Length: 182
Image 1 (cartoon, rainbow, N blue to C red):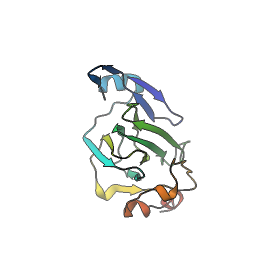
Image 2 (tube, rainbow, N blue to C red):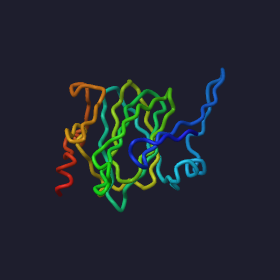
Image 3 (cartoon, rainbow, N blue to C red):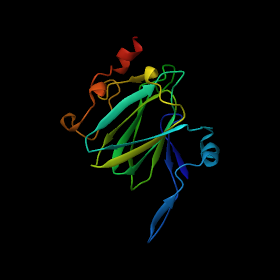
């Protein structure tokens, strides 16, 4: 696997080595020993999740508060998304900044998102299947969210606002500034 550092400490793009021939392909989607050797992060994943969505669906920006904050390793099995991780660690020098990466069933890229980040993605192809591993179980009482279109963060989504499809819950998230005022 090839691990690529991003502009934000602790966020990594992971490119697995893909072996292909006329039958198809094979790759190791995660190897704890290799991940530790290349990132210095010792992570134990406890929950795997999968969603299927159509073009325009935006899920996020979600996070879990301590003590149930989650690190995630996310990937697309089929289709394409723009995946986004926003640093919401108040004492971080990159607080409020984000990393955005296109993940697809074709490029096999993955994004590692450490604890202390909000996460979201917008689906770019119909019938997209998204998978992610978490190092902490889902705890509904600790979940939070940030507005997908927070002007302070300024995420450059590749779709127009009229193309975006949101859940009722995701429409109601506060901005990062409003969240920090609580």
